[in-house]
Length: 305
Ligand code: PSU
Ligand code: MN
Image 1 (cartoon, rainbow, N blue to C red):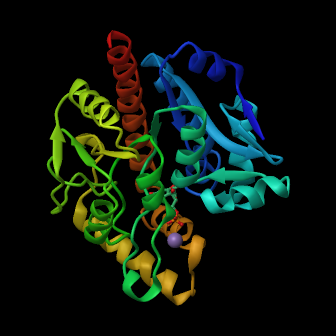
Image 2: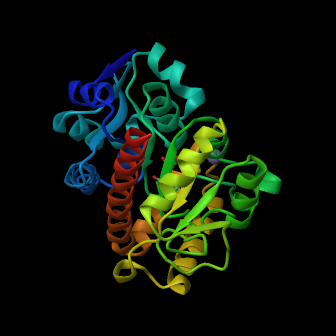
């Protein structure tokens, strides 16, 4: 079922730093060809920071952990025609011999199975607005409570109910750590009114938290909230108005289930004339850099004992 790229396999055997990357962001989160450019750039940023990238997707019913440039191109071109795959969808996509793009939940599951400890993404899924009526809560949150993976994100988009998302993470014992921030960043913008429990200003401090947690045998994920760099951060008032508009369109078109998030992402891209896409790319790059640094730091600290 697994096709682990030789470079990733070797890095894992030699206990070197590996950073997982998801593929739903490629297939369902961004338009072609910017999605492919972004995915390849993520890999090179991780390499620059001395870790090995492992982009994870399903091709023809096999889970690829680490992909060639051509394979990333294929997933990017196929876009929304590949299955959006979370934990529950994995057996369906594999048994059918399909192609699948893995969400945060799907990627965390596979990364943990393979012994990859750190994962860089853009934003996580969460509790949707109106969840009290729709019950729409992303599988990402329960996966964070289950799989032993550190997820580096730029927070989450306010297409979600972010206050409820943070409450849910607390209920599920998922630590949320702000990297050089006291608040939960809202993806496109650093601005937020939501405070988070822990703030660390150095990579070493984050690694110490993670190692201490492992020593306590506490399992599950850790969510790192890494705000978008200042120079790319959009004004909250503008992004909030755009999101309101996108949500109205989703309601008018009766979008629900797993279609909701990709629909909203595409609408936001359209409504901002690509400005949000550029912000999205930059925050993902920023997360790749931090994830690589955390992965290297964890491995170095572990080696020291
Ligand atoms: N949020 C984003 N960009 C994304 C996603 C979420 O800002 O690309 C993707 C991620 O793969 C995430 C998934 O795991 O959507 C969540 O989908 P859902 O809400 O259906 O669980
Ligand atoms: Mn959902």
